[in-house]
Image 1 (cartoon, rainbow, N blue to C red):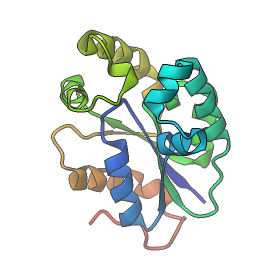
Image 2 (image 1 turned 90 degrees about the vertical axis):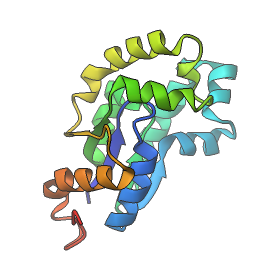
Image 3 (image 1 turned 135 degrees about the vertical axis):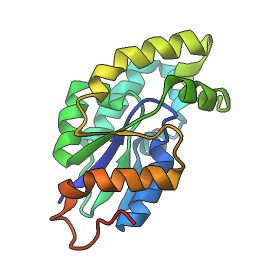
Image 4 (image 1 turned 180 degrees about the vertical axis):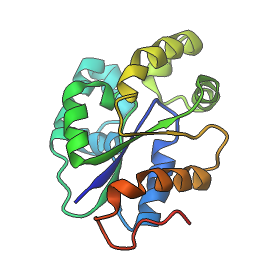
Length: 179
């Protein structure tokens, strides 16, 4: 059984696209950041503040290692999850890895509206530009890259469905449609 894993930089729409994609496919939906929050009884921002990024990344690796759903699932991962090589291998074993790609300008606009992103604190433009460039090679190792700039969530989902159809054709007969 192949699952769908969404990766990409923060604020590219992984959760919004993932929820809608799962609904269209008839799959379950799991946001790995929310899973970490549930397991930790803390928000991602609180984990960063109290324990630091390295502890968050450790918890993230544990969470990814434990992903073994018995039903087809769409996973939305955190922006840094796929940068870790161990996570990359594990996520690729789960199924098709789709990287949602959006311009840095769009990311900056979205991040300015959301103060719960610990890696966007301070001089967001400079920090996010550096982080974006640092992570881009890892994102390029996804199975499919889907440009979503300027698309609505439904348009992005349709584009993802078109791109992943060949990967999922043997999962559930008739489940993959781009309409």
